Image 1 (cartoon, rainbow, N blue to C red):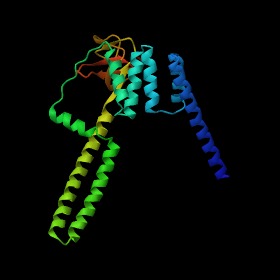
Image 2: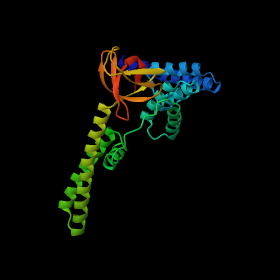
Image 3: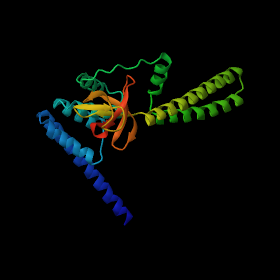
Image 4: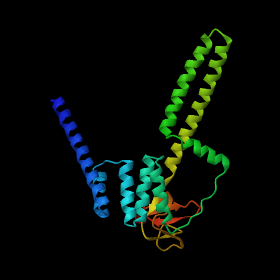
Length: 249
């Protein structure tokens, strides 16, 4: 009986994937026919079924860009880039979409040490860094045992140096993993979706207007109070914005 249930569940899952693939192909055909809104609806139906992929988000971004929906196009390109961070097509199209935004925000320059740490940290995900650390520690133990059992001085020197190099790599891997995890945990980015968003000094309509943002601008959400989001820009400006004016990544 259990075996029959397992087979039935497998058939349902397989059928679901097959239907999603058919919908994906149909959405691509609609896109090629310049029926961009219909293509968006088809791609959205795949997302609603619980499936996601870099290509799905990328195609959604392309369709929205064709309709001049700058906010949604940037949002979906960003989502695609999260799943495929080294994809050049996604990066290029995201750059094109960002060039179409109104707000010009100067990024606060980072120091050399900060840039170097970030570059190394972003080479892998925090899960990958964690696994690298585990493997390095295990290899360190093995090489240290070989160091004690080695007979010749040359092998002892080789095993000793190699083991300590791996240990240091493992320690740095742990540091990078925690650094990336804390960054992802503390930085919640969002894209402005409204054509024009008024940013307030406090989370209420009566407070002072501090600046305006426009569709497609990327912000960092640092706090939530009721239906208001506290945001921070790349240039250091902060303020409060209604939650319906943006969409979190």
